[in-house]
Length: 206
Image 1 (tube, rainbow, N blue to C red):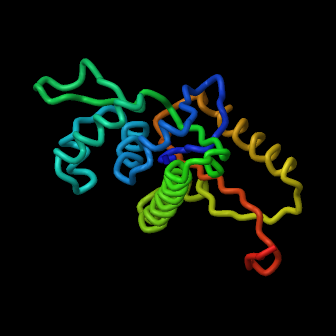
Image 2: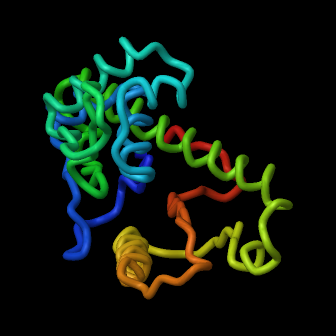
Image 3: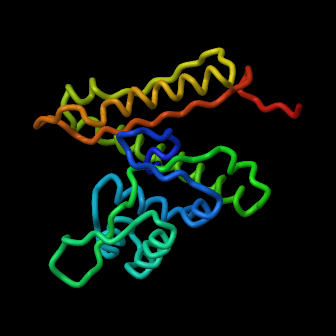
């Protein structure tokens, strides 16, 4: 978020401890810096407000404030046993975030705006991660370049078939959570995007 940043829109799985967003928690998370702070703690492990401030080019006061707001909504918590000074260490309270699409149709316009911000920020993060990979791919081995992928597919599906396929893809990815590790293992980011598209790519006013 977005692990979304995630992978914020994946279904619950027994291998992962996920947080399902409701209207209140969504409004608490829907801030660009909070989404990025949470993503950093999930991907890179515990950190202090100062460390995160340096990473994101923010003041430690700003990161400290937003970390406390994340804690108030149960997204992050204290990480005891890290560091030797007095500075507070934080860790993510969950592995991922589950977004309920019904939040996009909530009666409260504040919640709908929060849902829109959240999803657009996740999409922005995905784009930035992909661009970072493309800009640095030359520094990785041929094995890892073969182990990367940028693909897209177009299928003719019903909404139910699309949902079934998404769940199957998520289940397959999650089945690798406990894959054996060795000295060549790295964190691998998978982005899953699925959306309908009318012929010609235009929108309809129907």
